[in-house]
Image 1 (cartoon, rainbow, N blue to C red):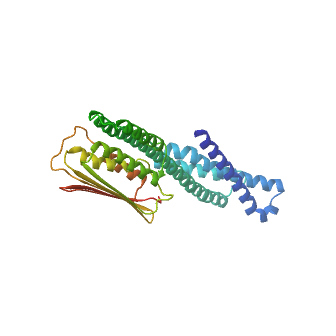
Image 2: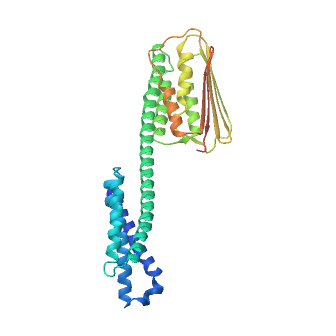
Image 3: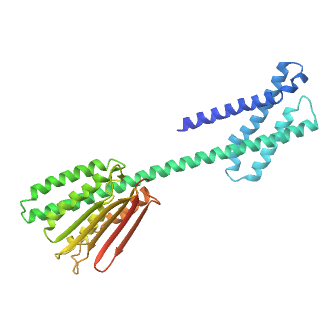
Length: 330
């Protein structure tokens, strides 16, 4: 990265010198007859370009880093003006002229100022690019961390289902183990991707609910409604499962009473409207586990769909409701 930046800096400055020299030669071409020879004309214009560029380079690579960036502005100003005075003097050294000196000095002010503007503009662009790259890397690291949190969280809940069935000595336990293996396969494969088909993600939710229904027997009535055209739409993987897990945890799993969970996923104008409503029991079996799912998914939504989602959570006396809208075109 450093070598590339240094190479780019050298190329830009060499290119600027060549361009400036060509502009000086072309701008003074009509006056070339005033010189003793063509070589004298080219030598004069080249030396003119050298003086200008040397002053600019001294400013860029010495004065700005050592004095300006360290907020030693007064000393920076004195040295910059001094370097321009010296440059103007060296240019007219062989043919001294007050008018020529001031012309050269003010021309140096103009070119150095233009060079400074270009320098700070490029530097700010590089800083913004580096900051954007850092933010991108930080975002990717955080998203990977959040994804990794979902994996054991989901596995823990699924193993609880199998444990419950095994304690009941249910003949469906082997089948449930196979279903869980399919769910885990999808979960592991999808976690490596940035997005998956919405259709596949909703099928995953359906299969997970089927597994949970077997464990909960007839204590929980689940309704899952899907509406709209899903074809081609994609969503970040494992983004919706925490809402379903939360509904189970604070509904059917926390009581022996009958409970209900109503889930709907509707697509309108490429926007997913996802809703989960679960009944709340009158008596709750306290869990020692503290859920991370909702906080995790809130953070992921903010990172993945900034200004492109709306999340509303209502915790009422008899029901818990989640309404999520995501613009899937983002």
